[in-house]
Length: 368
Image (cartoon, rainbow, N blue to C red):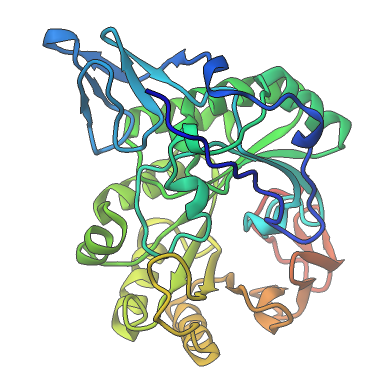
């Protein structure tokens, strides 16, 4: 039986972004046309086992997996949000956040309902933790997404806001068409995905920002319903596959902000991913199930940045703190500002052909 639909269409994800879906047909629950999912195996009695992420959900006939968007229909697994985004925006790419990918350009950004984690601090919980029946959507097949991106002169299509891998089949089909039309694909992800689907996706992806939510299994288990080992393996795979990688670490007071853990995390990044992988230490604000905690003190963010720089990471940023000097990109050789930012706005970019114009040092990233 269908649930009563609670209407929710994201319209305020970023200042200056705008919703394109208002001119597109709104879907009723009865019009959903699911697509058969990739990465699952059939089991006895018409059950299936999803193999997209480590939850490995065994789903009986008529039921759905942990992410709420994969449904067993007569012994076949279907993605029921294919072609049905709930958020459609044109954003600065800096919002992803990707600071070393085509600075100052716009990114056609989409999301569907669903997530395979249950983070207690989720900023978009109204859509990530919802079921498809309870959220308003628009009908946008892959070809229309690419067409809209071209018309709005976006250099990239971003799969973001919720967890991109839950709409894996939709994302993959869009990414293939986008690549054929000289549009780059970028992802913001939690990294909680199995190696096979990740490797199959990587050839179509230019860049990813992955949330490295903490650096302990206990934190991942209790706060996010996931595990750290999977995410670390995903980061190594992304790097090995040649996809540009940036990291975001949301620092939450009393939960994942210890100096010891921050140092361990930064050392792991340097030793396993390289010192040129940018990391964004992001400020937490009370939300969802963590409304009793205070915002992250600025001193905590600055301390984390200093730790990362001392460990030897080259590009360390502070996020959710507009106007802070750590929004800028500094040349690690001459220490001059080479990209000046205010919030999501690029005020100045002096990188030329991937090099600092002051000292000639090569700056890692995707610049063209």
